[in-house]
Length: 400
Image 1: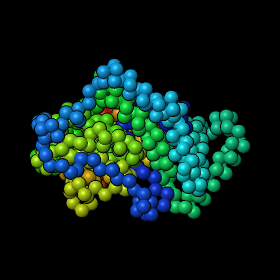
Image 2: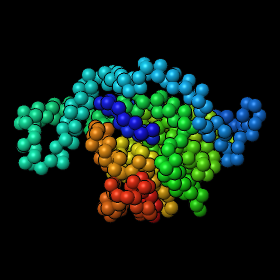
Image 3: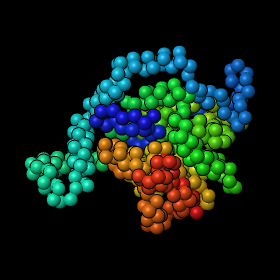
Protein backbone atom coordinates (compact mmCIF):
# COMPACT_ATOMS: atom_id res chain seq x y z
CA UNK A 1 0.00 0.00 0.00
CA UNK A 2 3.01 2.26 -0.44
CA UNK A 3 2.58 3.56 -3.95
CA UNK A 4 3.76 6.62 -5.79
CA UNK A 5 2.67 8.08 -9.06
CA UNK A 6 3.17 11.20 -11.11
CA UNK A 7 0.03 12.83 -9.79
CA UNK A 8 0.28 16.43 -8.72
CA UNK A 9 -1.37 15.60 -5.41
CA UNK A 10 -1.09 11.85 -5.02
CA UNK A 11 1.56 10.41 -2.74
CA UNK A 12 2.48 7.47 -0.64
CA UNK A 13 0.79 5.17 1.78
CA UNK A 14 -2.71 5.78 2.94
CA UNK A 15 -4.12 4.54 6.10
CA UNK A 16 -5.94 8.16 6.02
CA UNK A 17 -8.81 12.61 8.39
CA UNK A 18 -9.56 16.26 7.61
CA UNK A 19 -12.12 17.93 5.42
CA UNK A 20 -11.38 21.35 4.05
CA UNK A 21 -13.90 24.02 5.01
CA UNK A 22 -13.49 27.17 2.89
CA UNK A 23 -16.46 28.82 4.58
CA UNK A 24 -16.26 26.92 7.79
CA UNK A 25 -19.67 27.37 9.38
CA UNK A 26 -21.84 27.05 6.29
CA UNK A 27 -19.68 24.26 4.89
CA UNK A 28 -20.10 21.93 7.86
CA UNK A 29 -23.76 22.70 8.14
CA UNK A 30 -24.54 22.03 4.49
CA UNK A 31 -21.93 19.60 3.23
CA UNK A 32 -20.32 17.69 6.11
CA UNK A 33 -20.54 14.04 5.16
CA UNK A 34 -20.70 11.53 7.97
CA UNK A 35 -21.01 7.90 6.96
CA UNK A 36 -21.64 5.63 9.87
CA UNK A 37 -21.33 1.87 9.66
CA UNK A 38 -22.24 -0.66 12.29
CA UNK A 39 -25.49 0.46 13.93
CA UNK A 40 -28.73 -1.45 13.77
CA UNK A 41 -29.44 -5.13 14.01
CA UNK A 42 -29.52 -6.98 17.31
CA UNK A 43 -29.02 -10.61 16.43
CA UNK A 44 -25.82 -12.44 17.34
CA UNK A 45 -26.40 -14.74 14.40
CA UNK A 46 -26.10 -14.10 10.70
CA UNK A 47 -28.92 -14.80 8.26
CA UNK A 48 -27.91 -18.43 8.01
CA UNK A 49 -28.09 -18.82 11.78
CA UNK A 50 -24.34 -19.28 12.27
CA UNK A 51 -22.99 -18.01 15.55
CA UNK A 52 -20.65 -15.07 15.37
CA UNK A 53 -17.19 -15.93 16.54
CA UNK A 54 -15.96 -15.25 20.05
CA UNK A 55 -15.77 -11.55 20.82
CA UNK A 56 -18.56 -10.66 18.39
CA UNK A 57 -16.20 -10.47 15.40
CA UNK A 58 -17.83 -12.12 12.39
CA UNK A 59 -15.76 -14.03 9.89
CA UNK A 60 -16.62 -11.35 7.35
CA UNK A 61 -14.29 -8.98 9.20
CA UNK A 62 -11.24 -11.18 8.68
CA UNK A 63 -10.22 -10.80 5.02
CA UNK A 64 -8.46 -13.66 3.32
CA UNK A 65 -6.06 -13.53 0.44
CA UNK A 66 -7.87 -13.97 -2.86
CA UNK A 67 -7.40 -17.02 -5.00
CA UNK A 68 -5.37 -16.37 -8.17
CA UNK A 69 -8.54 -16.51 -10.24
CA UNK A 70 -10.43 -14.04 -8.04
CA UNK A 71 -7.39 -11.78 -7.81
CA UNK A 72 -7.09 -11.64 -11.58
CA UNK A 73 -10.78 -10.78 -11.90
CA UNK A 74 -10.54 -8.08 -9.23
CA UNK A 75 -7.52 -6.51 -10.94
CA UNK A 76 -9.30 -6.46 -14.28
CA UNK A 77 -12.41 -4.85 -12.79
CA UNK A 78 -10.27 -2.29 -10.98
CA UNK A 79 -8.46 -1.35 -14.16
CA UNK A 80 -11.77 -0.93 -15.94
CA UNK A 81 -12.99 1.46 -13.23
CA UNK A 82 -9.82 3.51 -13.66
CA UNK A 83 -9.93 3.57 -17.45
CA UNK A 84 -7.26 0.93 -18.01
CA UNK A 85 -4.41 2.66 -16.14
CA UNK A 86 -4.39 3.16 -12.37
CA UNK A 87 -1.94 6.07 -12.42
CA UNK A 88 -3.67 7.99 -15.18
CA UNK A 89 -7.10 7.11 -13.84
CA UNK A 90 -6.20 8.36 -10.36
CA UNK A 91 -4.82 11.59 -11.79
CA UNK A 92 -7.97 12.08 -13.85
CA UNK A 93 -10.11 11.68 -10.75
CA UNK A 94 -7.96 14.20 -8.89
CA UNK A 95 -8.17 16.66 -11.76
CA UNK A 96 -11.94 16.25 -11.96
CA UNK A 97 -12.24 16.94 -8.24
CA UNK A 98 -10.08 20.07 -8.38
CA UNK A 99 -11.88 21.34 -11.49
CA UNK A 100 -15.23 20.95 -9.70
CA UNK A 101 -14.27 23.42 -6.98
CA UNK A 102 -15.69 26.93 -6.84
CA UNK A 103 -13.50 29.20 -9.00
CA UNK A 104 -12.08 31.16 -6.08
CA UNK A 105 -11.20 27.98 -4.18
CA UNK A 106 -9.65 26.36 -7.23
CA UNK A 107 -7.49 29.44 -7.83
CA UNK A 108 -6.47 29.56 -4.18
CA UNK A 109 -5.55 25.86 -4.26
CA UNK A 110 -3.38 26.31 -7.35
CA UNK A 111 -1.60 29.29 -5.79
CA UNK A 112 -1.14 27.41 -2.51
CA UNK A 113 0.43 24.50 -4.36
CA UNK A 114 2.81 26.78 -6.25
CA UNK A 115 3.90 28.74 -3.17
CA UNK A 116 4.26 25.63 -1.00
CA UNK A 117 6.42 23.84 -3.56
CA UNK A 118 8.67 26.89 -3.93
CA UNK A 119 9.05 27.33 -0.18
CA UNK A 120 10.00 23.67 0.18
CA UNK A 121 12.50 24.00 -2.65
CA UNK A 122 14.42 26.86 -1.08
CA UNK A 123 14.05 25.78 2.58
CA UNK A 124 17.30 23.76 2.70
CA UNK A 125 19.28 26.41 0.79
CA UNK A 126 21.40 29.09 2.38
CA UNK A 127 21.19 32.67 1.17
CA UNK A 128 24.14 32.31 -1.20
CA UNK A 129 22.68 29.20 -2.85
CA UNK A 130 19.30 30.87 -3.26
CA UNK A 131 20.83 33.86 -4.98
CA UNK A 132 22.96 31.60 -7.18
CA UNK A 133 20.33 29.01 -8.14
CA UNK A 134 17.02 30.87 -8.16
CA UNK A 135 16.50 33.59 -10.82
CA UNK A 136 15.22 36.92 -9.42
CA UNK A 137 12.19 36.73 -11.69
CA UNK A 138 11.13 33.52 -9.95
CA UNK A 139 11.18 35.23 -6.56
CA UNK A 140 9.08 38.02 -8.03
CA UNK A 141 6.55 35.59 -9.50
CA UNK A 142 6.21 33.71 -6.21
CA UNK A 143 5.83 36.98 -4.31
CA UNK A 144 3.00 37.91 -6.67
CA UNK A 145 1.35 34.49 -6.20
CA UNK A 146 1.70 34.80 -2.44
CA UNK A 147 -0.01 38.20 -2.47
CA UNK A 148 -2.88 36.88 -4.62
CA UNK A 149 -3.26 33.87 -2.34
CA UNK A 150 -3.35 36.04 0.78
CA UNK A 151 -5.99 38.26 -0.80
CA UNK A 152 -8.21 35.28 -1.68
CA UNK A 153 -7.80 33.77 1.76
CA UNK A 154 -8.84 37.02 3.42
CA UNK A 155 -11.76 37.67 1.08
CA UNK A 156 -13.23 34.15 1.31
CA UNK A 157 -12.03 33.28 4.82
CA UNK A 158 -9.95 30.34 3.61
CA UNK A 159 -7.23 28.94 5.86
CA UNK A 160 -4.05 27.06 5.02
CA UNK A 161 -5.63 24.00 6.63
CA UNK A 162 -8.55 24.29 4.22
CA UNK A 163 -6.20 24.38 1.24
CA UNK A 164 -4.08 21.51 2.52
CA UNK A 165 -7.24 19.46 2.89
CA UNK A 166 -8.36 20.22 -0.66
CA UNK A 167 -5.43 18.16 -1.92
CA UNK A 168 -5.82 15.54 0.79
CA UNK A 169 -9.46 14.85 -0.05
CA UNK A 170 -8.87 15.01 -3.79
CA UNK A 171 -6.06 12.47 -3.54
CA UNK A 172 -7.58 9.99 -1.15
CA UNK A 173 -11.04 10.07 -2.73
CA UNK A 174 -9.39 9.39 -6.08
CA UNK A 175 -7.27 6.49 -4.83
CA UNK A 176 -9.73 4.92 -2.37
CA UNK A 177 -11.16 2.23 -4.66
CA UNK A 178 -7.72 1.23 -5.88
CA UNK A 179 -6.14 0.99 -2.44
CA UNK A 180 -9.07 -0.89 -0.93
CA UNK A 181 -9.21 -3.40 -3.80
CA UNK A 182 -5.44 -3.93 -3.75
CA UNK A 183 -5.68 -4.64 -0.03
CA UNK A 184 -8.52 -7.10 -0.67
CA UNK A 185 -6.38 -9.00 -3.16
CA UNK A 186 -3.66 -9.68 -0.58
CA UNK A 187 -6.05 -10.33 2.29
CA UNK A 188 -5.45 -7.00 3.98
CA UNK A 189 -1.84 -7.87 4.75
CA UNK A 190 1.34 -5.91 4.10
CA UNK A 191 4.78 -7.44 3.68
CA UNK A 192 5.50 -9.58 6.79
CA UNK A 193 8.10 -7.26 8.30
CA UNK A 194 5.85 -4.22 7.80
CA UNK A 195 2.75 -6.02 9.05
CA UNK A 196 4.61 -7.01 12.21
CA UNK A 197 5.29 -3.34 12.94
CA UNK A 198 1.61 -2.46 12.49
CA UNK A 199 0.57 -5.36 14.70
CA UNK A 200 2.90 -4.20 17.47
CA UNK A 201 1.41 -0.71 17.39
CA UNK A 202 -2.14 -2.07 17.43
CA UNK A 203 -1.32 -4.23 20.45
CA UNK A 204 -0.48 -1.11 22.47
CA UNK A 205 -3.86 0.42 21.67
CA UNK A 206 -5.85 -2.76 22.34
CA UNK A 207 -4.02 -3.43 25.62
CA UNK A 208 -5.24 -0.05 26.83
CA UNK A 209 -8.83 -1.32 26.57
CA UNK A 210 -8.04 -4.10 29.03
CA UNK A 211 -6.65 -1.91 31.82
CA UNK A 212 -8.48 -1.08 35.01
CA UNK A 213 -10.83 1.84 34.41
CA UNK A 214 -10.98 1.27 30.65
CA UNK A 215 -13.92 2.76 28.77
CA UNK A 216 -13.78 0.15 26.02
CA UNK A 217 -13.22 2.29 22.92
CA UNK A 218 -10.37 3.15 20.59
CA UNK A 219 -10.07 5.80 17.88
CA UNK A 220 -8.35 5.21 14.54
CA UNK A 221 -7.44 8.60 13.03
CA UNK A 222 -7.01 8.50 9.27
CA UNK A 223 -8.66 5.08 9.13
CA UNK A 224 -8.75 4.96 5.33
CA UNK A 225 -10.53 1.86 4.06
CA UNK A 226 -10.19 0.16 7.45
CA UNK A 227 -6.68 -1.08 6.83
CA UNK A 228 -5.81 -1.84 10.47
CA UNK A 229 -9.17 -3.26 11.57
CA UNK A 230 -7.92 -6.83 11.10
CA UNK A 231 -4.73 -6.08 13.05
CA UNK A 232 -6.77 -4.66 15.91
CA UNK A 233 -9.03 -7.71 15.94
CA UNK A 234 -6.01 -10.01 15.86
CA UNK A 235 -4.53 -8.04 18.77
CA UNK A 236 -7.62 -8.83 20.84
CA UNK A 237 -10.11 -6.00 20.31
CA UNK A 238 -13.05 -7.87 21.70
CA UNK A 239 -16.13 -6.24 20.18
CA UNK A 240 -16.83 -4.35 16.93
CA UNK A 241 -18.45 -1.44 18.77
CA UNK A 242 -15.18 -0.74 20.58
CA UNK A 243 -13.86 0.81 17.36
CA UNK A 244 -14.33 4.31 15.91
CA UNK A 245 -12.54 5.27 12.69
CA UNK A 246 -12.43 8.77 11.22
CA UNK A 247 -11.12 9.90 7.85
CA UNK A 248 -11.37 13.02 5.72
CA UNK A 249 -12.21 11.04 2.59
CA UNK A 250 -15.85 9.95 2.14
CA UNK A 251 -14.70 7.48 -0.52
CA UNK A 252 -12.24 5.85 1.86
CA UNK A 253 -14.92 5.63 4.52
CA UNK A 254 -17.40 4.14 2.06
CA UNK A 255 -14.92 1.36 1.32
CA UNK A 256 -14.33 0.82 5.05
CA UNK A 257 -18.05 0.51 5.74
CA UNK A 258 -18.47 -1.98 2.89
CA UNK A 259 -15.69 -4.18 4.28
CA UNK A 260 -15.95 -3.84 8.04
CA UNK A 261 -19.27 -2.22 8.88
CA UNK A 262 -21.42 -5.33 9.20
CA UNK A 263 -20.06 -7.00 12.34
CA UNK A 264 -22.12 -6.51 15.50
CA UNK A 265 -21.73 -6.83 19.21
CA UNK A 266 -24.23 -9.57 20.01
CA UNK A 267 -25.10 -7.93 23.32
CA UNK A 268 -25.57 -4.31 22.24
CA UNK A 269 -26.43 -4.79 18.57
CA UNK A 270 -23.93 -2.08 17.68
CA UNK A 271 -20.92 -2.28 15.43
CA UNK A 272 -17.94 -0.30 14.26
CA UNK A 273 -18.35 3.39 13.54
CA UNK A 274 -16.70 4.93 10.50
CA UNK A 275 -17.13 8.64 10.02
CA UNK A 276 -16.04 10.90 7.18
CA UNK A 277 -15.23 14.20 8.79
CA UNK A 278 -12.50 16.61 9.85
CA UNK A 279 -10.72 15.12 12.87
CA UNK A 280 -9.98 18.54 14.36
CA UNK A 281 -13.57 19.74 13.95
CA UNK A 282 -15.46 16.55 14.81
CA UNK A 283 -17.49 16.38 18.04
CA UNK A 284 -16.35 13.23 19.83
CA UNK A 285 -18.57 13.69 22.86
CA UNK A 286 -21.17 11.43 21.22
CA UNK A 287 -18.83 8.47 21.82
CA UNK A 288 -18.73 8.88 25.60
CA UNK A 289 -16.62 10.73 28.12
CA UNK A 290 -17.62 14.19 29.30
CA UNK A 291 -19.32 16.99 27.40
CA UNK A 292 -16.24 17.73 25.25
CA UNK A 293 -15.24 14.12 24.65
CA UNK A 294 -12.51 13.82 27.28
CA UNK A 295 -12.05 10.29 28.60
CA UNK A 296 -13.89 8.95 25.54
CA UNK A 297 -11.15 6.57 24.36
CA UNK A 298 -8.64 4.20 25.88
CA UNK A 299 -6.40 4.59 22.86
CA UNK A 300 -5.94 6.82 19.84
CA UNK A 301 -3.82 5.59 16.93
CA UNK A 302 -2.39 7.45 13.94
CA UNK A 303 -1.28 4.76 11.51
CA UNK A 304 0.52 6.32 8.53
CA UNK A 305 -1.57 9.42 9.13
CA UNK A 306 -0.05 12.05 11.42
CA UNK A 307 2.26 13.40 8.73
CA UNK A 308 -0.73 13.96 6.43
CA UNK A 309 -2.56 16.14 8.92
CA UNK A 310 -2.22 19.90 8.34
CA UNK A 311 -1.74 20.82 12.00
CA UNK A 312 0.43 18.36 13.90
CA UNK A 313 0.36 20.19 17.23
CA UNK A 314 -3.39 20.71 16.97
CA UNK A 315 -3.90 17.05 16.12
CA UNK A 316 -1.85 15.81 19.07
CA UNK A 317 -3.65 18.28 21.34
CA UNK A 318 -7.02 16.97 20.19
CA UNK A 319 -5.99 13.32 20.51
CA UNK A 320 -4.60 13.87 24.02
CA UNK A 321 -7.83 15.57 25.07
CA UNK A 322 -9.86 12.51 24.05
CA UNK A 323 -7.82 9.97 26.01
CA UNK A 324 -8.87 8.38 29.25
CA UNK A 325 -6.85 9.62 32.19
CA UNK A 326 -4.80 8.02 33.53
CA UNK A 327 -3.51 5.22 31.32
CA UNK A 328 -4.83 6.12 27.88
CA UNK A 329 -2.43 5.46 24.99
CA UNK A 330 -1.54 7.67 22.04
CA UNK A 331 0.20 5.66 19.32
CA UNK A 332 1.85 7.05 16.20
CA UNK A 333 3.15 4.46 13.76
CA UNK A 334 4.51 4.35 10.24
CA UNK A 335 5.69 0.91 9.18
CA UNK A 336 8.13 2.27 6.59
CA UNK A 337 9.78 4.61 9.03
CA UNK A 338 10.60 8.25 9.58
CA UNK A 339 13.05 8.47 6.71
CA UNK A 340 10.37 7.28 4.29
CA UNK A 341 8.07 10.08 5.46
CA UNK A 342 10.84 12.64 4.97
CA UNK A 343 11.15 11.33 1.42
CA UNK A 344 7.42 11.87 0.94
CA UNK A 345 7.74 15.42 2.24
CA UNK A 346 10.57 16.17 -0.16
CA UNK A 347 8.69 14.65 -3.10
CA UNK A 348 5.36 16.32 -2.34
CA UNK A 349 5.32 19.03 0.35
CA UNK A 350 1.78 19.95 -0.61
CA UNK A 351 0.52 16.64 0.77
CA UNK A 352 3.15 16.02 3.46
CA UNK A 353 4.09 19.28 5.12
CA UNK A 354 6.74 17.85 7.45
CA UNK A 355 8.30 14.67 8.79
CA UNK A 356 7.28 12.72 11.88
CA UNK A 357 8.47 14.00 15.28
CA UNK A 358 11.82 12.66 16.45
CA UNK A 359 12.33 11.52 20.04
CA UNK A 360 14.00 14.85 20.79
CA UNK A 361 11.11 16.77 19.26
CA UNK A 362 8.62 14.73 21.28
CA UNK A 363 10.49 15.58 24.48
CA UNK A 364 10.53 19.27 23.58
CA UNK A 365 6.82 19.26 22.71
CA UNK A 366 5.87 17.45 25.91
CA UNK A 367 7.82 19.97 27.95
CA UNK A 368 6.13 22.86 26.17
CA UNK A 369 2.61 21.42 26.01
CA UNK A 370 2.09 20.20 29.56
CA UNK A 371 -1.67 20.50 29.01
CA UNK A 372 -1.46 17.29 26.99
CA UNK A 373 -0.76 15.32 30.15
CA UNK A 374 1.33 12.80 28.20
CA UNK A 375 4.58 10.97 28.84
CA UNK A 376 6.72 9.30 26.19
CA UNK A 377 6.65 5.57 26.84
CA UNK A 378 8.29 4.32 23.63
CA UNK A 379 10.69 6.57 21.75
CA UNK A 380 10.70 6.44 17.94
CA UNK A 381 13.89 5.75 16.04
CA UNK A 382 15.46 8.73 14.29
CA UNK A 383 15.42 9.02 10.49
CA UNK A 384 18.28 7.21 8.76
CA UNK A 385 19.07 5.28 11.94
CA UNK A 386 19.47 1.52 12.12
CA UNK A 387 16.38 1.34 14.32
CA UNK A 388 14.30 3.21 11.75
CA UNK A 389 15.38 0.77 9.07
CA UNK A 390 14.75 -2.30 11.22
CA UNK A 391 11.61 -1.33 13.09
CA UNK A 392 10.01 1.64 11.33
CA UNK A 393 8.50 4.52 13.28
CA UNK A 394 6.68 3.90 16.56
CA UNK A 395 5.96 6.45 19.26
CA UNK A 396 3.81 5.48 22.23
CA UNK A 397 2.65 8.04 24.76
CA UNK A 398 0.68 7.45 27.97
CA UNK A 399 -1.86 9.73 29.56
CA UNK A 400 -0.70 10.74 33.02
